Length: 148
Image 1 (cartoon, rainbow, N blue to C red):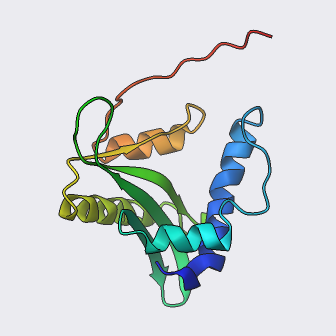
Image 2: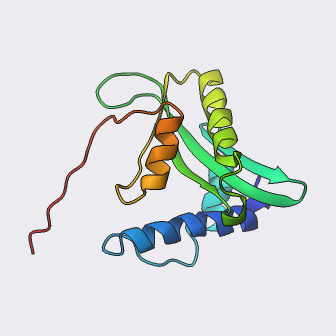
């Protein structure tokens, strides 16, 4: 992915953001852009970022953005944290997400990461099932209780 991919990436990232707005309107608000162009440019130019785009010809199918980190929790274990992964609606269920995931995993491994982490909201059962089908397991749970 390069900074020239901003329009396509922005469109996909907004699909992902809208999923979160719809699933948790108490926490997410509608936005015009998830990243400004400058924030996106910095992300794709950062050597600690894994920014992958799936495309067929000129058609962008999906993306995966992960960030390399030196430690996770209390131990100094290099990890890759998946910040965003989305496949455009018309191309879902065609193996694009699995290919993006495996490519991110390989890239993370090549950079010395020993684990791939990500967060999925409880309302997104499709994503939970997908990630578990790829061998991911639950690491922790965050619980909440409104106290209005």
